[in-house]
Image (tube, rainbow, N blue to C red; front, side):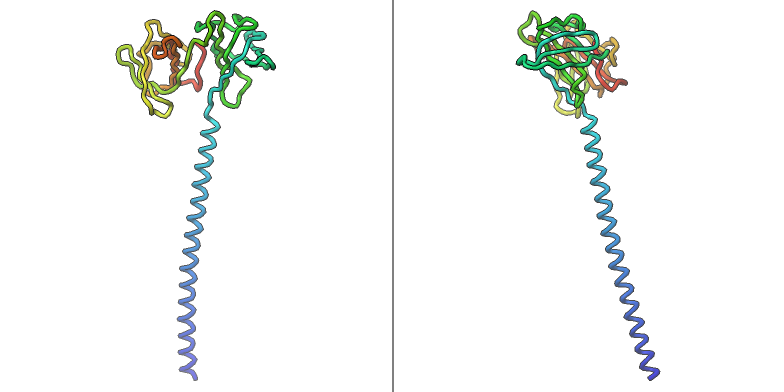
Length: 222
């Protein structure tokens, strides 16, 4: 009986040991799977969060046309293009205003003048750019934003905001250049700088002005 009990005890002990090892193996696998799932969830959350932040930070320019009702240095009241409704925009120090392609002031905007107003992102109240037409029949300028690459002779090389799709334009003799809102020279432009190039409608490949950013987060008015 004693021998049988010892053998039984040995077998029971061996069985228990194998069971414990199996449980530990399964437990470790479950823990590893759990860790993988948790890591994956965290990674997905980080990616989703990053995507949300990028989407939230990106300020897309939105333009709409209409007519001037009244304009002061701080506020613009305009009619919609069909003339059926009115709405107000706030003007800020860096609001950029052009009248028939030339730099002007808000007080130069007359009632009835056709205008194109540009806002940024979700901020529909603040006008960052206003282009007015009085003598001309169509808006005079086009703007292109991207990154500065180089200047060779009178040719400006630039890319889109992602550093892709290279393109070039010819610099006009009187091209206006600003860096962070201050007058500068084309020699001050550095590769990778964010720039906004303005071209004339009558010469879509000729740059009449270049605005560059180095320190400021947004373009300033010329």
